[in-house]
Amino acid sequence: MKNTALAQWRAKQKSTGIWSNLPDIHLAELLGRSGADWICFDLQHGLMDYSALTHLLPAVCGLPITPLVRVAANQPEQIGKALDVGAHGVIVPMVNTAEEAHQAATACRYPPDGLRSCGPMRDSMLEGFDYLESANNEIACIAMIETTDGLANVDSIAGVDGVDALFVGPMDLCYGLGLTPGDFDNPKFRDATAAILTACESNQCAAGMFGYTPALAAKSLAEGFDFASIGTDISFARTGMSQALRTVQGDTQADTNKKNVGY
Image (cartoon, rainbow, N blue to C red; front, side, top):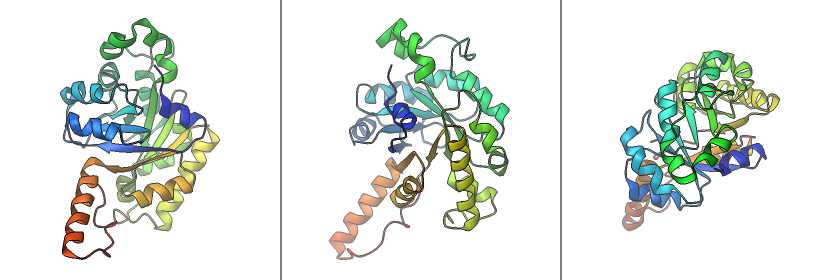
């Protein structure tokens, strides 16, 4: 297997992604052809479950996009199932300590580097034993930093062997910092993201941002983040619908950026 998004992060090339919350294979295929570098199917908050992955991941297989899955929790069985069905990496929520990061990293890799059980159903169908030879180096383990505990331990989390990237969950981080969700220009939030960037740079770990808006994604990439999501399937539909209605109604000057935040 070849994880093109992971190769970009290792080469310090900027990378953009799309977030998928809806379990529709036709929409997944459309997003897979969008030109984005990676797509994340969300099992934590998305309107999908594991069974949906058996359709969604094949829908983007062979397209020039790296499929990732955000698992619902930092549990080895959830991580293993997502990888066995064809994900090229997992985004693990609520990672608060180096020990939790180590648990996620070892769940992503076969012995001797980790504790992943061998049974890659989807990838072994396509690649056979070649998958087993490359998986440990090509699977991306991405730990989310979205709590004050995670922020306090960010340097040790970034330094865990096998953690390829940290990923900011900005809304939960705002809650943890006592800020209004979405107050991304607040100095406390900006200091937090700066600390995450520093930890990633010090530990040669990629830094990612969940971009609630294209503007936040662009700003994050400009400030040093290596990758960012530019929106979700739901936000794209909402924005397009709103813009179409305003165009027909003659209100073409309205700023939709803040009205179409989030999922």
